[in-house]
Image 1 (cartoon, rainbow, N blue to C red):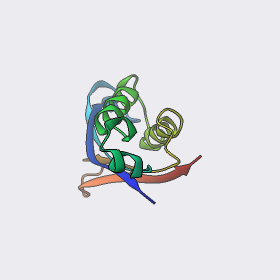
Image 2: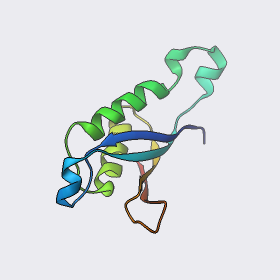
Image 3: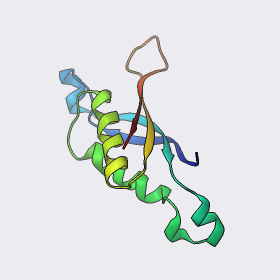
Length: 116
């Protein structure tokens, strides 16, 4: 299976369940593995057959920042649904990390895999 990868996509947004979190921006880091047939792009060296990293990154940043979200689980599900429906990937693994959420851990997170 071919994959397109995005690592450590930083998105600053309002995220959290506590009242104090609802008034600040915090960073989330997304790792994405997206099933994509890279052969047509490679064979033709033509951008139109590639999954554009910048377009995906910009869309996900808009999705995650358009309104406050309480749970990183919600972020992961929304990101996966967007990639499956809007970008037509057949399978995706989404990792959402929230650094600083637990003082004794460098980061906490969730990982999901979804397919069409």
